Amino acid sequence: MGNMQKRLSILGSTGSIGVNALNVVRSYPENYKIMYMSAHSQGDLLIHQAKEFSPTAVAIGDPDQYETVKAALPGVEVLKGRTGLLELAARDDVDTMLNALVGSAGMEPTIRSIEAGVDIALSNKESLVMAGDFINTLLKKKNVKLYPVDSEHSAIWQCLVGENSDDIKRLVITGSGGPFRTTPASAFNEITVAQALKHPNWAMGRKITIDSATMMNKGLEVIEAYWLFDLPVEKIDIIVHPQSIIHSMVEFVDGSVKAQMGIPDMKIPIQYALSYPRHLPQDWEQLDLAKVATLTFEAPDLKKFKCIQLAFDALKQGGSMPVVLNVANEEAVYRFLNGDIPFTAIPELITKAMNDHDYLEHPNLDDILDLEKWTKAFIKRS
Ligand code: MG
Image 1: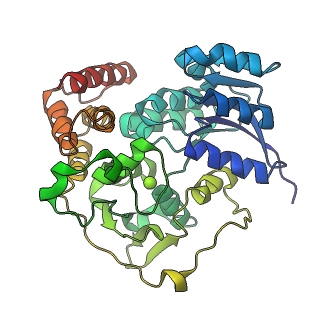
Image 2: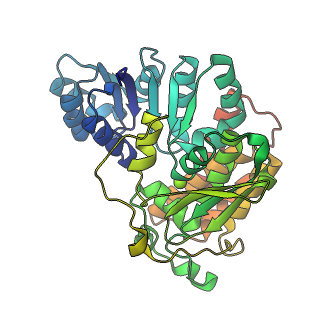
């Protein structure tokens, strides 16, 4: 069959999601054309990528690297800083924007692209955690599609192909349990940065790896699923599955359960978000269930992993709570990575920020940006 070439913008092209997405593009050059790419601080890699994929324009976040990037890429428009990133996100001569940015910084670019009428492949779950209501309203208004890249949500999306949403009993989001699944809570105080950065199954960026260690990542994914699949929080559950082979499940009203499986590697959900509704052939490592042999499951320990409960609380309370939860978590994670606070202080600081902020029931976009600033400052001085 003949393929229309899809025009792509990849924001965060030098991170692990961006690099995997470019691998997909490299293997299907007839299917995809890179229009725009952006990097925060890895200017050298951005230059290298731009030379290979010839985008129309790139954005470099770090203003100190602007001149270097510009000099290295004659004929390519080079934009600078946060303003440059937002300008790139607003361009409309693109079919799909892959948002592979890290953290709350990814929210506004998502919104800019939807406003421009561009479909979104969303890896930046923080966009939905912070502004799910606003984004869903805008998607409808602009008739724009949002495809999940997060492996759990990709799994649920794949399980729901051909199904009627009235038939869903619940979603079951799987999580590996992270590196401290079997560590007793009493030892959590001594957890080091190096230990927290060692994920048993997935190779990911630093922020999300710490989120997996605290299991806040599952909490954020519950909130993400709530906005993506339009189900009440009571119908979204978490189960710990240490092998990370089942990426999530959907249980239907008749008791039938569908699960999506695969090797624990982000390249599969990344490619599906770009190739949907088709699955494109790849000769990468295949799932060998005989070799995996055993799949096990256990209930998550909400007492030990306090961040999960905080996320459920924030979602139930709604309004400004998920915004503060998300930003407080992000800042606390950076403080932990800097060796500034112990691992156990992460949920403590988030709790403080959630309790101390001025709660808003219906925050608009300006409110969300103000809350982001307030929360960052609050965590920095706490
Ligand atoms: Mg995930």
